[in-house]
Length: 573
Image 1 (cartoon, rainbow, N blue to C red):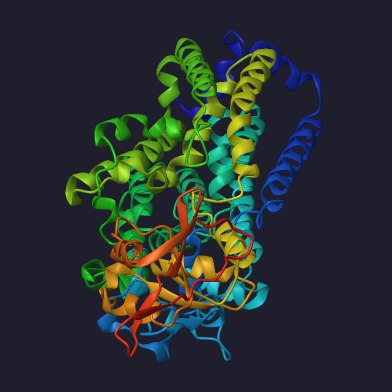
Image 2: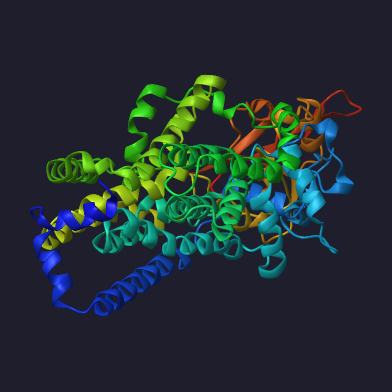
């Protein structure tokens, strides 16, 4: 049965008579005006929730990485490939001042061009370059501050609303529009990743665009105004994130099954078009995938059961728990509400839940969830335990929930939506109130170092983006000694002895080392005096003072030359 007939016949189903009657009781334009006003208010709420806290939390490693790449600086390359003249991260043999490290997250004068951004992506990242090229242009205009970086993501998230509206109307009618937009606005997962300085909200935008264009091709055929945007959107998605291929596959497969007015032979033409557009970058993909990177092994580190991750992955889209915190009781409420929605929709619509148009959304969701599972099977990784690798499926999941809500009586619909939102409140609170992101307190560590600053040498044991995260927020002058273990440029005891030999206090900061051991800490504990230790979430700050040096004197006795100084503001011992 065609979808239009489905929507008409559904008015005779239980729970839809009131809605059907109300449509005839009021002018159509009044209902449209209310919908428009409602969606605008929801978009305003989404903007308020996202824009208000874009600079509350310090940037974490991935966001710092985004900023470095977009300003033409490579961070993850092997030491042998580093070229300081091209902005690559280099570990100097001696401590360097804070501004040196801060320059990796800023545009140079004159700024690096797109070619250097592409080089940095090829050397450092396992993602395609489009997001970084767009961010390059954005930061040239808006600056490289925390708020500027994250607002770029907020803009793309807000741009999703018109397409979520159109898709919701296509699969569930006007009653599905308000729930779909509200769910996308308030979902903790959406709220969190639409304020992250990464490519996820851009990927959502390209996913909802492609899904809408796919439906339009089915309805109107191969019009130039539809086929060209479809090709451009598909190519843009594949140049934004490699896992976008699963969204593209879902849309392509749906058109193959349900061509409508878009004859199957036209699929070949649009596929060739997408392939031609992405080929300049994808011919370099083998080189990119084989490049050694500092953190290229982290996805191979066992972090749980892949099977459990694959089973729970669809629930992550509507969960109130995540990297921001865990709320088991609220999670149970969501599971119960979703189960009741599924049962109610199954009884009312039976197989029509998987009608032609809705099948596209189901395929989109299934493909996004299957992507990490397939990738893990092929590469031996653990992406199924990292929900952001399936984020392209978030709009599809929320559209399906919105469709189920739209099939309920208005009062019951409001009740179920209210329960979901209330269950989300703990997650929303955590996302908005947290002072750090992904348990990386770069800003707090910098504040502690500034508060207890002295004539120190600060060793930062981390990956390059972790080193840059701490130095980004330092306000007082300091000498920074980068210690990236994966680069194999530091030696114990030679390097650490050279630092201790100057008699200055040594501050060791350990944060986001990605499993790399810290042999310099062992040496310092054995050969220097630990005067204090601070733990800030996942970071640790250790304060060492060199031990007394014994010097020989002519009469055969000895005297002690102590270099110890009282640490300002801290207890020693």
